[in-house]
Image 1 (cartoon, rainbow, N blue to C red):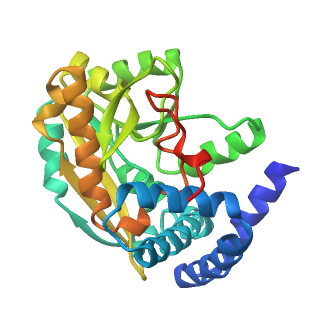
Image 2: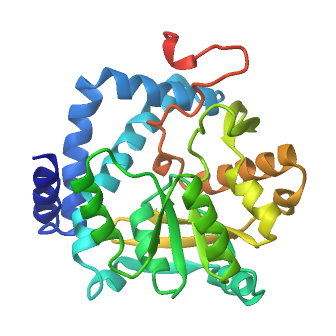
Length: 292
C-alpha cells in the first residue's frame, strides 16, 4: 500500500510545473511549521548551533526557509523524475566549474564524488548519469516495493546503484578501479565506530570516515557537487576538494567538513537542517533533548 501511495504521489506531482511544486511546498511548509513541533525543534536547534551570531528572529526565518526548501526537494521529485530525459535539460540553468570534474576524470583514477544534503540530489544524480560510469551509494528503504520504484526512477539515466553495506564498499572500490565516478552522501551521521569527531560549522560532529578511507586507499581525486535550486530550475556546482582530504584521518575528515560548509554557504536554507547532525557527542549530551 505504501508503495502504491508513493507511486501515485510521484505521478500526481509529475503533472505539476516546477513552480507549481514549489507553491505546494510553501503550503505544506506552513502546516509543518505550525503542527510538527519535532521538525521545528530540530531545525531551530541546528541553526542556533551553526549560526549563533544571527539574531533569534534571523534564526527563526532561516529555519522557516529551510523547511520550505526541504519540502521543495520532496515536491519536485515527480517533476524531475517524470521529465527525464526529454524535458530534463530545460531544468538545468547552468553548470559551474564542470572542468573540475572533467580534469579529475582525465587523471584516469576514477573520481570520488561527495554530494552533501543540499538542494536536490536527485537532479544531480540524473545530470551525472550522462557519464557512462557513474554510480552512487544508497541506503535501501525497509519497503522492498518502494526500493524497486526508487531504483527505477533513479536509474533512468543508467546510473549504477550500490547498497551501503560491506559488499557495497567492495563494489565501490572495484568501480573506482575501472575509472568510474563514485558518489557518496558525506554528511550522514555514521554508526558508532565508523566515524571520528570533527568540527562542522563550529560544532563537534561525529563524521563518517568512509569517504576519507576510500580516498586514501584508491588515491582517486575527490570532487564535491551540489544542485542548487532556483525559481525556474537548478544550477550544478562542482568544487575541488581541499588537499587536506589526503592527510591523516582527522585532518581528512576536517577538510571534508570545511568543504561541505563552503557549499552550504551558497544558500544556507537549502541545506537539510531537519537532520539530527549533532546527536552523538563525546560527552554523551544530545542538543536535541534540550529545550531552548
